[in-house]
Length: 330
Image (cartoon, rainbow, N blue to C red; front, side, top):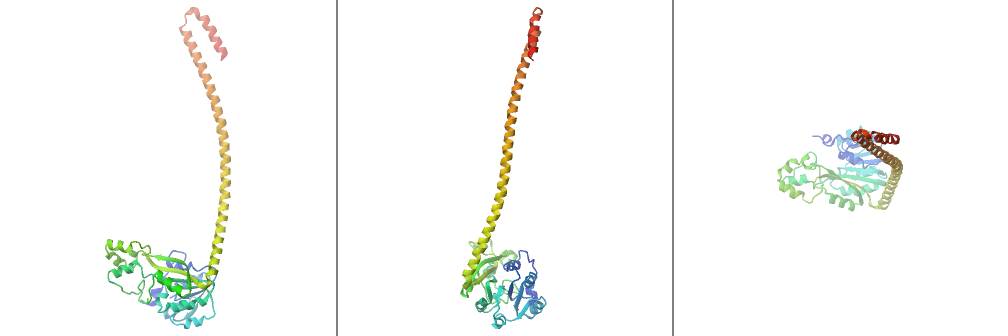
């Protein structure tokens, strides 16, 4: 497998793959971006398509050939040597990307200490490193295995290994202040260590994972800024937070006004319905009274008819008078 094949890959720029998430740390707006160790340029292509001005530093011959065709500024240089830094002396970049690069360097501390000179005011450095504390690595070691491979967590070109704590310590010692962390979580069963993981007993896996929330972190990402810019960065973050709160308040106000107007309309409709129901109840009561009167008169008529049928013939005149009176009432 050639170097260019090993580090070439495709991804959906707006998706949830790790490369896409890393690129979301680059703000929009046609910024100046310095990308260290881009390989054949999978991320470089996306940066250029988004209108950024991209400068790349690479030393692999095959990768350099591929990069030359993309339209980025290409600097041939070994990151372990300070020569490439002299090439960009005096320049400032809005964003510097060092994604899956530091683990390939013998002295990443030297690069980190110098990079602060090339960050523009309010600029940022985006770093991604493999997590050697990944559960898959420990599962392999539990089986007595620590074998290098062409790519992945134990890429044979990795000369430095990091945990979250060790990369944070190195950054602080080199004058960088972490601002934001993110994790690329990969189930061990879906990694190159799946076989070693399945070789452990259920009891061994449970003991390994107990109280360990970051067991599946395959890579760590951190956005950092120079420590000397801490006050300005914190002020900018405070302003951004205030702007967001202001926007949220405005949105809530609009929603509140809309809901209040809707509530008033419902209250008005409810009051009208209540008035209609009250009038209907009065009408129903009056109708029931009339029905009771009619029923009473009906009972009186029925009683009179019964009386008529049972009276002797000589009393017919009296019944006739009563019947006429009843008919006169109705």
